[in-house]
Length: 396
Image (cartoon, rainbow, N blue to C red):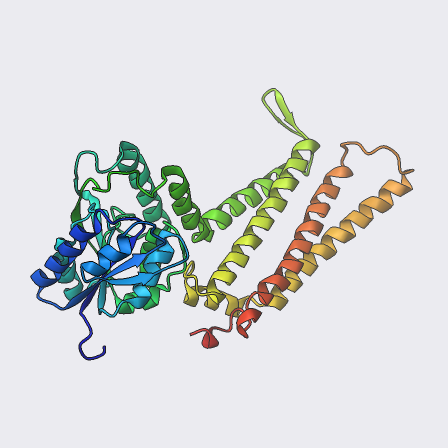
């Protein structure tokens, strides 16, 4: 750290916050003084049309301009401009008390890389949070995040949190909207950072106008991002269920019709099984593509070491051999079926014993083609960085 650089940078995104900025900046300076450290206050202007910039400068804050609209874009611009060893972020609408900075600093000093504020474990003033957010949105989204990524935080979307500059570099933040709140927690957990949490009070914002947050739009952005960062849940689990169900239906009906009570399952159910099996293969391949892309682009959606280890064992040629073998068996079976059908006069196809193996062989043929060409695409995903996927030693 350069001589004279501040210990903490307080970063506030700002879009038309002239009414509340002075109190937030004063509270931040009070918190810095109470912690007994040096600090700076950075206000990131995200296209304000009021006097926010003039007000921030008059209060002695450093103004950083961010032309790209979005909560995440504004915060990332502020993080990039920060000189402090650790960063405290919070909204500029008086909903959080920046004078609580010493509590975050204490946790950073204790060795935490990321310190989350928790409104759900703290106090929410009357009128500070809509009931839909308090009792449905935030608990549900935080619960989904804990389930998918095993990160032990009670309030994953609290706007007040602190982290070290080293942690910021390891998280490699990319998103530009409200989903940045989820990205920070997900990537901190994925990078093995030490995460702490302290209760905070959420005050009713003092702007006197509707918030920038849009409940369903921004809630969907969080959920969408979490699903994209969890390919095991989005692709692999549904893919395995679909493939397993399809394979079970085909296998159970291959010998002949299956009667369960008053219902008879026959060749049409086998066709459903075929569709489910092919959908399962497709989803599993998509999951592999997403993991490979996440690995080569360093998005942090999967463990680089674990994924690279698997790719060292399974190469392009393995996929080509497996896919080619499936194609060979399926094509041979379909040709056998075709020859028999022609020999019998190429008449009407029925649901007899001849058609059942044809469904199995066609499933193997199409699935084999998917695997064969999917193996090529999976291998190609790493070329953009000059390395083939799986060359783990060059990805470090």
